[in-house]
Image (cartoon, rainbow, N blue to C red; front, side, top):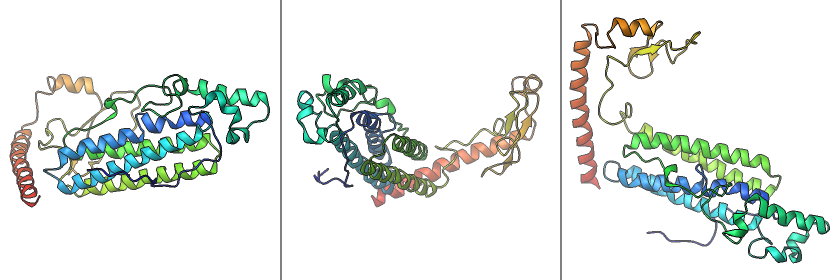
Length: 301
């Protein structure tokens, strides 16, 4: 159940109308890294988490709800930036708030021109309203949502989503000198950081959380790091220990020769037989562990 409170979570304000920045801000309303996408992503993920992870279901629903409140902040800010343009474009010159930023007829015509050319849909389709479209007028799309049914995968998607959203707010702040808008964007940007840390903590609380799902990685193909380009740089991504897996990378200097020698990776050292048997045993153990975990959480829920 949702209950709408008419007060904004943050006291969003603007110093003056700015149709051009209103259009840019649409990116965080109906864009792929915007608040609507985040809200729908976490809201959708929550259903798959409810049975195996009821505590994470609660967290996802809380954050999804906050994202909807951020969507309201962004929408309200866009409306304020369009004041004097929204629904009253022809009479914009008579609006006192518009007059404050104008200097003669040329300025009046310029601000109307900006409102229309920044995004014609403001006037042609929405009449100055806010719809779930990005700054180019492209409608919001469900393909922006990442929900895979495995909470550890979903949480990693969320870490990336929050990172991208923070970056967009940071870029937006470069395109306005309005101190009130800067405050609002700083608030929204900071909440992305908070959500990132919440998702990070939730992921850490699920152990083991890698590899995702139940099946272990095939030991025959896990450790090879191939030299697929001339002058490949060596680093912790292709030498030394594979983080958290108790194995070391095997650097394949000449991958073509290696593939030929192993007959397309089908010929493996004899010790791999034991490694494969250990993998099969681990798969069964992990399946049992995860099943028991789900059953316990169902009984508690």
